[in-house]
Image 1 (spheres, helix red, strand yellow):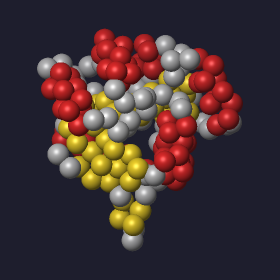
Image 2: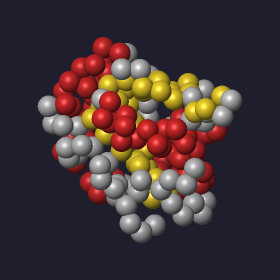
Image 3: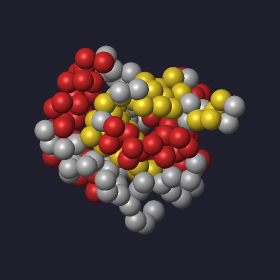
Image 4: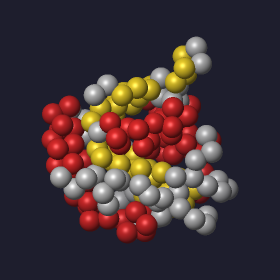
Length: 175
């Protein structure tokens, strides 16, 4: 794949894999990264000939593959793993980039991360993602909080990827 990807998905467990496939099915180009290269390779094999999919094998390669501002969906276990991933990504981010924690973190952790990243002018969005693996693939319900600017930067992507109820996307910013 040539050029920059629209979005990045960090973490290729079942939720991250299915959400990446959802985004691809909606016409977005997606870069993916997982801490274990074997999982990235296995996902790329499973995805087959998806032309708008780019597998990356280092944080530098992942961050460099994304259009600016970077919009990165984190699908890692809530708690300390999210903090560890943010610490690893921070040196590769620039003001205006957006990190979306899709791991249903505790709101106090999300508030703390929002404040910490704001000092670097990085937009942090804590997002509840409902619907399980099938929802991630076909359209989850998503509830966002944190940076309103960050949400605005990724709202179009979220609206396209979301489940629908009577034609309306099941996604909103809650503050």
